[in-house]
Length: 62
Image (cartoon, rainbow, N blue to C red; front, side, top):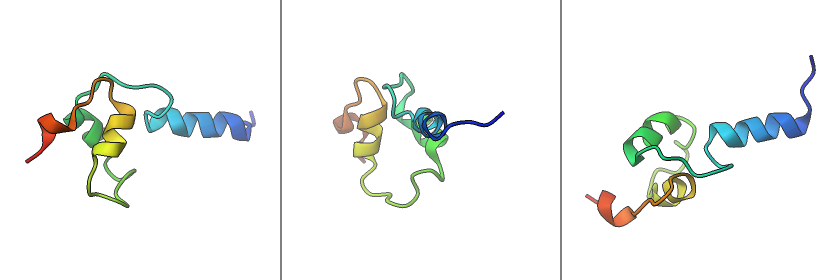
């Protein structure tokens, strides 16, 4: 079976939680994305905000 480029692209977006927001916590999302987002580590909030419903960076600052 051969997958189309569209199917492959949508699968990649789903794996990165970019098709819809997730209910994972920030810690769970970071665990899931380890290695996928390692290119730009500071700050992670834009990537998390794009993926997690109701994400508030103010609650995750050091």
